Image (cartoon, rainbow, N blue to C red; front, side, top):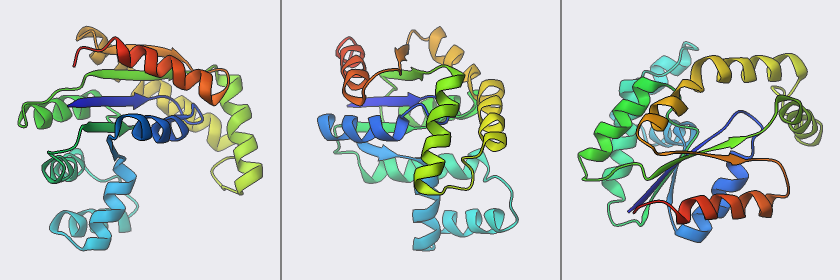
Length: 191
């Protein structure tokens, strides 16, 4: 089974590249936002717990998120693998993901981080905001999101570095060029 963590700051192209990776390898896409919405809509026990927390404006706990990931892993044991899009966001989440995968005799094969300079991220997100009207794609919020990523999420790369599973990929260039870099990195991963 191939399990990939796709990582990068807002505007790095994770969503675009996830689609291409899923198409090539047939992986199951795991996005915590999608999982939360699915569980809430299905009114599962985890979904009910998450909805209560989300309705107060708080972040859903790691325990609930990992519980949802475990459900997804259980439901898709016959898949060729998973792509974790934007998760884990903290070292604690990375540890919990490792435990969850170990329960299924699985592991993360590679954590690919898309490396994009801040100026380019801001440019991409402002353009996306103009094209889509997303209210969170304004300069103040963009800068805050990048700062939060740098402060709270970058340490996850060090966690995967220690296990020799982190691969930085240049996130500048055409979508296809970036994708070919990802495929090249993945080709070097021990399955």
